[in-house]
Length: 631
Image 1 (cartoon, rainbow, N blue to C red):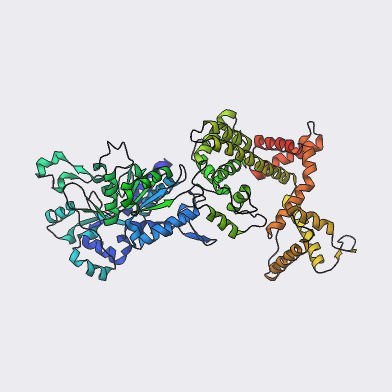
Image 2 (spheres, rainbow, N blue to C red):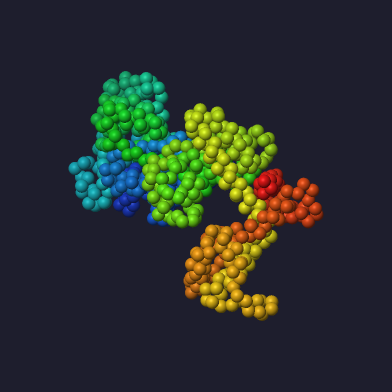
């Protein structure tokens, strides 16, 4: 009954949003809230903007796409700032077809789906409210009732520009139903819905021989010709094509470049002139965002066809490449798994990361920049610190290959192989090695992969395995450190005391004996060497730490374990190095003694409680790292 009560509440809430009144009453709403009369392009831009944005490293991150699209921040920013924003400002960009072009499973359809679902929700808000002439199959803008001769005066009074002419059907209704009294024409609030074909249309091309333009523009209703006397009577016409129904909102064309030529010219007329031809009528006005998507091969074929030259300048192409960030690729897999029936299967931590490393490597182009390899490039793209490189280097790498990310392994392949791993293993838990093995086995079955690519991808699986080996060792070593953060903080404080004494040329007082001693050079070097600080560079590094320490003190802030990224890394590595022998002995013992067994159980418990493993994956990780350390 609880769900039925919620359905009832939902229905009542929807009913409360409904409104209808005369055109005169609608004008009062326009006077008070001019945004109700905005264009489709303006509406989609304001919808995206209403969800908020964050600026990071000079780029805008639009929250509207945040939980669905991962790693494509640059592409999304370009889409919004170079198309939606200027189109909303009535610049000429709005007279272009928006074409999303990219590889399969790259996010094109997801972007379009987000826009459609967003439109539906936005039309139920005060800011996104849409009104139409009641009973109009095309949900026509009521302002089309204003005669062209009065529109300049209307703009001066209301601040709203009116584009488009009253449709043939509503022209007839105005005369026959309302005796020309436009102030009496009934207006209603509409709510966009793809399912109900209100303000959102979708068209998928069929066989070119069977494509019918009536699917887009509507058709004559022959059963009514006898009643109305002529095919040119708008009452004898079904305004039920996708373009009719998408009016005021958006129209999606899947695989648009497979459309017959006459369809493309129809779309160009709609985007360029804001109208299209249907039946034996004058041009019909429509206000809708035309968005299409295609792949790179189809687009290259389209461009190479001389007959399409006139269309090129009427289309704005937005490349949507694959994501190139490992952490974001993990999120894509997590999302796909959440939406599947695999949620009951335990996927060990780092398993998806191993898969993501492989996927991203297949999409990256080999760097031209000296001193950097593909793995370093991958880490830099993901925002990791790489010795000797910074954000400027990242930007230079991105400029080397403007079309980077248009090829490689797609996320669906990875999820398919994870599914295969689950079925093959027949246990409720899989780890990184299971996933990498499944990815490797699947390469032979991937029809579109050439022999050259297959060999390259096999190498990337090996790299992903090596990267995982390092991650796995760190996972175990972290779990072996009892109160890891406390140990790290103690070691850091000790190091800072010694650095401060060294830089200030002071001595350190032993807390137990009170004896004064020289700074512990051996301790400081054992930490600094972990991150490659040479003997010559140690003084500069220590002074840098002291400056950071002083800066925090001046601001009344405490210098924390995570306050200096490289020092944190050095502390971690030092702790791990000290523990390596302990881990090696404990994990490799076939008959552990009581103390070793206790330590193993503690580690397994910590992996489960603090790191997200279950008992199966924790024990598998422990055995695997033991074998790595004993090689």
